[in-house]
Image 1 (tube, rainbow, N blue to C red):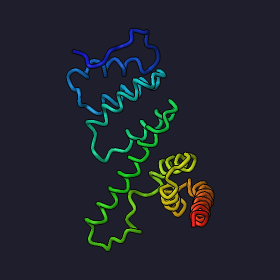
Image 2 (image 1 turned 90 degrees about the horizontal axis):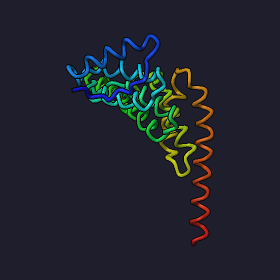
Image 3 (image 1 turned 135 degrees about the vertical axis):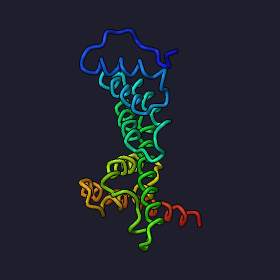
Image 4 (image 1 turned 90 degrees about the vertical axis):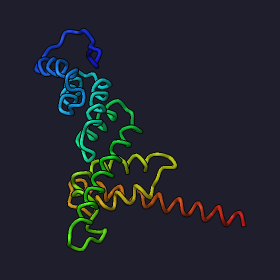
Length: 192
């Protein structure tokens, strides 16, 4: 039994053969991450983003717990479909996994492991995800500005290519935090 319903439209291009191979192997190997990724890539090339997302979610089920490449692809696809909340969730997953992997490595090493040196994978690997999440919470009314500030400080202090953009956004986030604190002080003085 096939696990996927195929739209019977004619397939063209180089992804046709790859797509048909995936369909043929899926009933035999339903948890093969590479097959689901290949089928998701084929759907993406065909412009069928919803089906690509479903395939990549299925690939994520069988993938290593520390897999971030699939989560990044899912974040991009959700962003392309203007599903920002889902895109942010996958970007946060990338950040959390990257930071957790480094913390695990730091605690297993015999060298001193202070938190400043153990912030995760190199920031450059997850800087774009941090920028996306920080921008989302900055723009969102009532968003988590402290989370934005923390992420932006890490990216701005790194040697990633996004460091300058992070520093600029960090200034705006700090201004917004200061504005919020002033509003809270004014409200508390009015109540007294």
